[in-house]
Image (tube, rainbow, N blue to C red; front, side):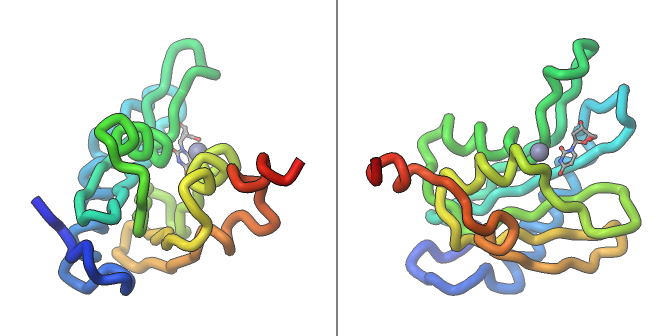
Length: 146
Ligand SMILES: O=c1ccn([C@H]2C[C@H](O)[C@@H](CO)O2)c(=O)[nH]1
Ligand SMILES: [Zn+2]
């Protein structure tokens, strides 16, 4: 199922964006977070128009918990997708949810000019590029500079 026209380089169109926003809210409802009771959902739009979602998955060994954003990226990579257009993130917080530093770095591995939609439960959102979320970042290209 193609959620979005892969030949178009513009941001997700309204219909696709609504789907991306819905998919991150649905993923949040799957969160396994008995320790923090802080459910998060993410939905990742690939360059060919597919959506991969993820939720946070915690563990009795607290440090082994995984964030929703990385769960979505790991699912997409594992199914052969490495080019991403956008990610939407949802939580139950009254403010816009914003990804942790570890997730920003993992997102950055796959480019700096894709869009991250930070949402609130009331359905409002703000959009930031990865470059805005992680300025002066270190990435794969930098390894060639030594
Ligand atoms: O952007 C975020 C912020 C937090 N969490 C998770 C990690 C942990 O399971 C819980 C509380 O930090 O929320 C995410 O998945 N994504
Ligand atoms: Zn994170």
